[in-house]
Structures are given as C-alpha cells and as structure tokens.
Image 1: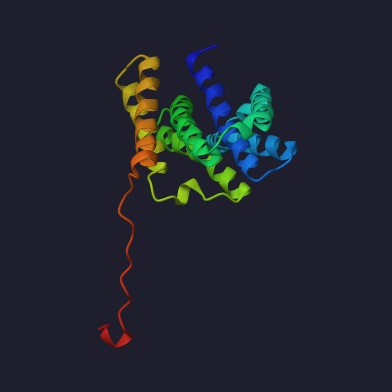
Image 2: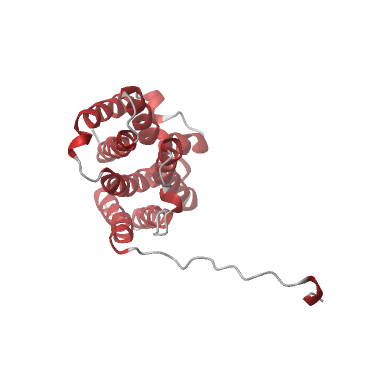
Length: 210
C-alpha cells in the first residue's frame, strides 16, 4: 500500500467517524450511523471524482465503504463514552480536512496536471463531506461557523501543489501540506481565527441617487 492510499483510507475513516458522531448526537439508529458515516466519509471524494471525470473511488474499491461501516459500528458502541461529542466532531473534521485537502490535491494534479485544478480538487474533497454531514444531521454548518474553514483546505491543497512542483519527496509534500491545513483549522477552533465579517451599509435613499 502506498503512502497516499494509506492517507486516503485514514481520511475516509476520520470523516466517517465525524459523521457517526453526528448521528450519535441526534440519537439515530444503526442505519442512521451507517448512512451518515458513509456520506461523510465518501462525499468529498465522490464530488471530486465526478468533477474530474474519473470513476468514483469507492465504486472501484468498495473497501472504502467497509471502512465507513466499521467506523460507524465502533462509534455506535462507544460514542456514549465521549463527554463532548460536538467538540470531538469538530476536531475530527479538522484532521479529516487536513488529510483530504492533501489527497484531493494529489489526485487533481495526477489527473489534470494543472495546479489550479489540483487546488480546487483538494478544497472540494476536504469540505464537501462535512457540509453534507451537517446538512443531513441538522447540525450547525462548519461552513457557516465564524472561524476559518475553507481557507484551511485551500492552504493545504496549495502547499501540496507548490511543494510537488518544487520536487520535494512525496512524503514531505504530504507532511507539510497536512500540517499547514491542520494548524490553520486547529488554530481557528482553538483561538477563533476568522476573517472580518461583512458589515453592510444601509442603502441610499432614491432621492440621493443622481
């Protein structure tokens, strides 16, 4: 098994765990756990593959579905041991985001050869599963939280692309990119890093418009 295959399995497992934790917070049955774990674990990669026009990864290799199912079962029997499941969900999401932004960028670069497509591929892979999870579980969307989220995926994917073009060894590419994405997202969760919010100004009165 190659480094990137191992990271891919780890990414799917971590995101599947966050989906199963969301199911535990909503007190769903085992089917709900399996569904949310599967959607969260494979959602980003599915969108990535559809956009890139390649066979969907879990259709080619159903082991990814088995990984999601195994993680869902584990969380189903152990989630009650975790005191703050939403906090754990957010940190698992941060780990998954760091992993998936790297994997997505690597696949985008491999398929297209384009740095732009690689970065977009990394962002889609890293964020879409979590967005689906929150939408289906009626959780507060990570996308709409005030602290940075998509930016962390963007940085991870961009760093991987840059280090790859600098001909760093693949393991170094992956390590630097994952560290960059996790530090940004982790710092956002820990310290509330955020961009300034949009503050709309009142519209002008019709008589003031010349």
